[in-house]
Image (cartoon, rainbow, N blue to C red; front, side, top):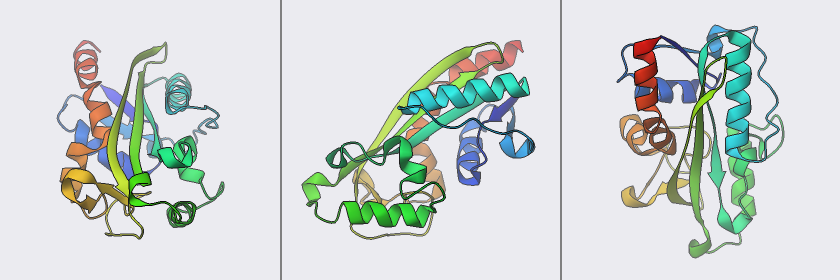
Length: 200
């Protein structure tokens, strides 16, 4: 069964592929395999709305089974920012480094108690006809005062995972893929994927 990851983010694609490897019946593609496809604008106000939008648009346009995720970092002390704007927090064409710099500036006045944060991920599985499954998950931690580590992407070098006393950028990829918000959300749809793959 062909399954398209509705993303061109190479880091996200690699992470999803690593997790989906346990389902050998899946032939996992991504939007990199469809260079002429134009994704919709992310106009949703929640991660779930954006994930639905991306999944349905890709599945109906490409005529394929699709998983789409929308995820980001939430800092309660910043009223939920960066939230759904995580990838463009410092502007539409912002780099990951630009976004991290802005976050550190916005949190400069906050004490340790107010630096708690969590990653949130919503994953939607869709066929060309309908959304079949939706799952959400979170991963809790805190924001450091400076970047640490050189792995990962996005805000990983600022996100301290409590139980490990390391940022996501200091944790090896295999461990991160076992504990991340994306892993937790994907785990919730694996059974559905498995049963669909058998019948398709």
